[in-house]
Image (tube, rainbow, N blue to C red; front, side):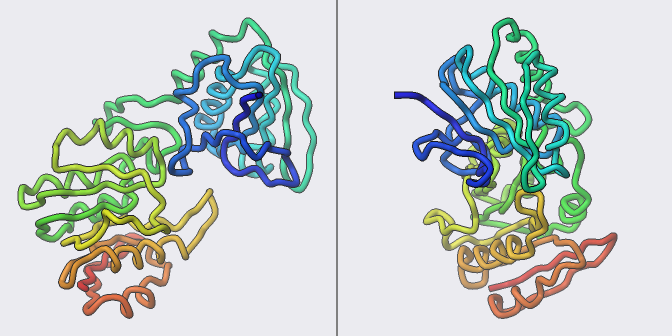
Length: 303
């Protein structure tokens, strides 16, 4: 029986993926870790390649490491999200590449050859988790705001109200906001939630306290542990798979309302142009705009 893998959700009309293929995307909770897959263990793999250059080359390198010698790799991406670079990036590993264009995508296929282990190892090292001296935290290319402090997060940290009890950080990233929240001893427990496994693993490195709990999850789905909370904090996301999705942040707001006890508070920062008031007001007893500045706005909403 062959062992095949898939990374992400390639369109079915562009790539034929076996139904029993192992999912490796770090953005799909419960998926296996391609970085932990034994070398030479896969008979084939198909990747919907990530849009970021470093992240994409890293995923390609992990896939090549996991493949057996002579096994096929298929990588595809939209033209405007890295697809036009796939051929050159695979050729840089020493591969012969066939490429076709279809439905605004590039689809590249190649076969793993011998003698490229050193190149693979270098690319994996370049794209793997690392300690960033400038931000003073563990991070990884591909994670939200991986090499800088997001201005919305910075604005929220500067204006955090006094929080206490049990809370959650929705869309925690590498844990920058959570560190500020946990600076108060009045916070007894904080659950960090993110859809990106890499972010959760970095956050685990960055928060050395038993008061921090970690959950790799999609907040569009309910989770039994997120109930009766005293507070929720979040830098509300509005992109899904690189595309603007206002419904994503709105789903976060609804999940916060469901997770809070009566009287609990949701503190969130959001991009100014997005319409959150219409979602907040039916779900919370009181909604208070705190500040609007530099393209962002902060709300406190009490249930």
